[in-house]
Length: 273
Image (cartoon, rainbow, N blue to C red):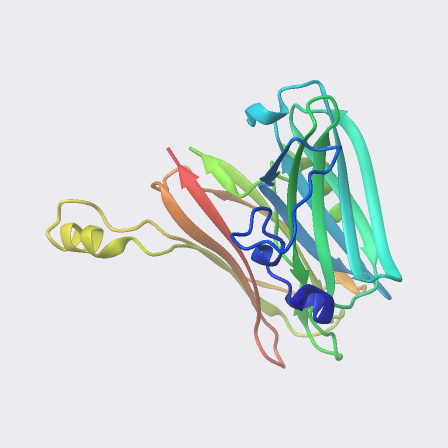
């Protein structure tokens, strides 16, 4: 099985819950129903490890209509290298968990269990953290609900992380990321954040060419920034997405250092109205 031979390359469909040709079947006593877990996950580097954030929100799922849910974030590189974080609480609202593991390929499993209803939601797939050979690098993007005073560090962002990447009529979305390998005293780096619509189909392109619908509205911000001291440079930005039509979009942050290659991080979102 690929997940055992190559943990970082494991795909969600390697863990499909109802395969057509299952070699064997069993019914776990703790679960009457299994569903895929809508969530958001992001990886952030530290000196000798990676911090992984996993967030989910089951408040709109009728399978989890009870009062409490137990969540777990598991990172497994092999049977000897496993990191686990758990919590329990009410179903309402987003729950965010963090776990720390060596920066090597691993299988990420974010799970939620409603003990009384015996319902389980799960997301499981491989993650391969990027290498850091003395060069500028960027973390994953973590989307969060921005307060009036925008947080400027990971610890402050985690409690406000969104539990999914699907938004209904969004207005303002916070985007958090970290830069690594940019030291103080260096030349300014150029940063750009774009929000670009994906696809659209031939029919929309046809009616758009006739002027029957407006063009896609994309977002683009650019700025120069002088690096600050320290191995980690955290950044937060609030983006107004209220003018975006329904559809799939990619939020991308690109960093172009004075020397070296440009680095990018992406997060796909869905807007519904």
